[in-house]
Figure 1 (cartoon, rainbow, N blue to C red):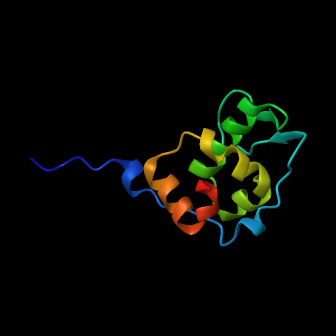
Figure 2 (figure 1 turned 120 degrees about the vertical axis):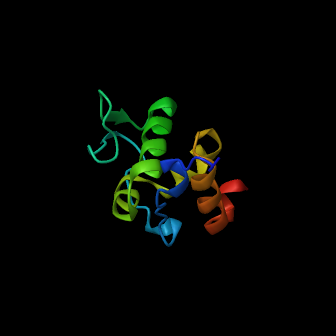
Length: 103
């Protein structure tokens, strides 16, 4: 029997070149674009830890480099990284490129 290939195992993963390229807001409201988050409420409050997790998981899973650069904040990503539930491939790719995420 041929092993099953899942989309999550072959989907391309985008990663910014540098964490310094992340210039998204670090506080306040953030509206997630439809191509990143198609849930019922795309508005998140970056003062809420659960909203940050929701937004950052969506952007890292679904967003391309441009979305990552415009929606993610470097310091907030580093602070939130341990709380994010991400597919192993995404987590490994980001941690390989940015070891400071695991510090």
